[in-house]
Image 1 (cartoon, rainbow over the protein chains, first blue to last red):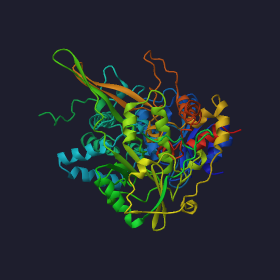
Image 2: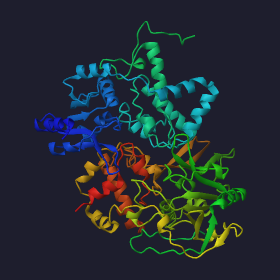
Image 3: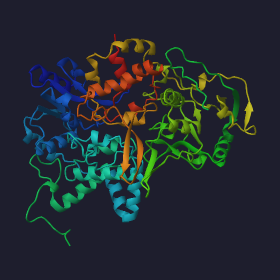
Image 4: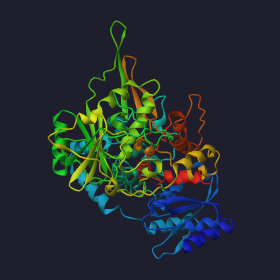
Length: 267
Length: 353
């Protein structure tokens, strides 16, 4: 048994958790999210750099919440999401135990949110080189070229809403696209409606997106939608110094007002 | 009229189909054959490698754009006959108060889908049964009549492929009009229908005897016995495994939208009291709202019930309704699932003895 497996078995045995969310190997030989219900199943757990899913999304799932005492294994993206969700007061109805594996292959069980926050702040990642390059490329385009770029991308969208489903920050019990009285966004998947959806999604995530990249990774149409929120994060950091997923007491720019806020956009 | 050939993955009463003609097309002549299809004015939809490194069906202008090195496309080709958004009709209120309704299918182009895998073309048999068996759907009928399927046998497969578990194989001819199988420097060509025959140019094709395709096809292990699954799934509804198997499901529509046999749709009206359109849009049983009643009641309250619906539809309900297992083992939902849910792993677990 690995250190992680031992630790999780121990947490089950001493009654700290009654459900563990982690990764296991699938038949197709790739890491998949898994849900462990007792100590004897702990040996299924694995962790490799290929474990990319942001597991924090499962903390909203009713079937998961039923367990009340939940253990969750976090890669950095998951940990940042938990920090951000804590700042948004999202965990009032579950008890959670958060685990990770650090750079020295040691298992960490965070004793409290302060410890998690410190760990996340010490290991806060920079945006990936690849994304930076793409963002720089998009910035280099004229407004019209950029419009054309996104128009072409969104034409391929099929509105499967995988982007929404994988996002831990998309936790509304009823999404605005599901409203039909009035209907804000058309149900049909056409370029203009697709663009409406992605614009709304990006705006709702402005300053809340922890840059895990799951939406872009899972988009079946291959649209790099994570760049929209990544770009807004760049602006928000520049203008307001906020970094989503950095502080459990963080305030996000679109939800706060300060008298000394910059008003340069008012002309 | 589309030749109605039921797939072998029927519940044991499948009709075997035999090629009408057997031909050889040299690899050197493939681009000519392909470009001739384009020059005849047909829309040709073929697999294209996109910048994101994945292969998608797309309307192409020349053979140079066509990808030949792919296991499976991300999305199926069903959108050719069942578009993600289909305009059923448009309406305009005229000055005299009457309403003009327009429903013009005359501009649906003659289309060739090139490079489908055998699992995909067999899926068209299911689509045809679903849309045409009772209350024939004129939109599907028109599109299908104007569509010709040229499939290419699989020389490669991956861990997600499981066609051999649902009664098909990498060289199945079910549902296609022509099946091409690469055999070194030529393609063994099985012409299955009159529609396929109409595309055969005597200058490019030569006659041949029947050949064995076996050694040129991908090897795909059988993951489960379909007969056993069909029997055991009868009592699987109450299985406690559903909850466990669906825990990872995040309720998106990626599996249903990429699936070659998922046919659920939602009717949407877009417009005003003066003019507008009635549209048929893809829908997915994974969505929480899929079964929501106007009253607000939702009989499928959780993802466990929704995932179960999807799997039972493929392996039980479609067998009861149309006599067909409506999963062709293409593996798209496995490759695409954000949570990496695996349909054959799910099926094995809920039907295990």
